[in-house]
Image (cartoon, helix red, strand yellow):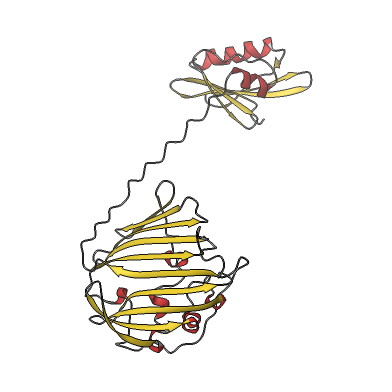
Amino acid sequence: MRHLVPVIALGLTLVACRPVSAGAVRTIDDVPEIASWGIEARLRLGDDPPLQVVEMTAFHGRDPVRESTRISVSERGGEPTLIESRVVDGRRWVRVGGPWAESDRFRRKELLPLTPTDLLAVVERLVVVGTEERDGRPCEHRRGDREDLIAAGGAPEADFARLDHATIDVWIDLAHRFISEFRLAGATGGRDGAMPLTYTYRHVALDEPVAVDAPAVPEPAPAPAPAVPGQDEVDRKLGFPFPVPAGATVSIYGATVNVLTTLPLDEARAYADRTLRAAGFVPGEAVERAPGEFATTCTRDGRSLVVLVFQVSARGATIQLGAKP
């Protein structure tokens, strides 16, 4: 999304403007008398097929705060990318062509080159054209040009100084003094000649019911259980055959092989002794390190292998091969 307006997106020019005084023009967010509203916005850059088209519909409710936004971005006539966001109970969910996910990284303003908030800096200097009805509401119509857009600034990627010419029409709701609608028309130079730019932004459905539900987010799939090492892996790790007793489970951590058997302690000790002797090892004297824990150092061709046999599970004793001395 870093090239929302790719031809004019080369930076941001800011010009100092006088502050908005009390009682001056405001945005709909600062009009508590309006409980809910919708937004429709559309940007088109270039001829057919357009270089880029951005369309947005959004709905807001004030108490409780709720929001639903849907943005479509397409380039050169290609398939659009859909970006959706919902806010319910103080939580935001976002999805970009895939499943919903909770996130606080959605910034709608970054996807639009100009918003009513940007226009507050210059609306007082625009020329009053007259009074009109827009969607049945009396509005004051004001008009500005390229220089006013440059002063407004807009999004960091919308460098309106790259426009060859432009007109900005703004409609201000007379009842509540907020920017109800604006329309931008202009052209920007490019490698293929001048490209037309149109951008409209308007508020709709004032005080109409807004129902926004939290999306159905699928529960994350449980992580697959780790694979139980098989006989081949045990033999490969040890470097010699050590048949795993029937019913035993195996886990391998680093250089240590743990065989949880179903055998009682004495039988497990005998099994380990018998199996290691069959593999050519010579067991040393068993040392009881702790009650019920026996350690034996076995040797073969200069190699030493520490074997622990102990029982902490009612299921059976554990044979641990490769433990530290």
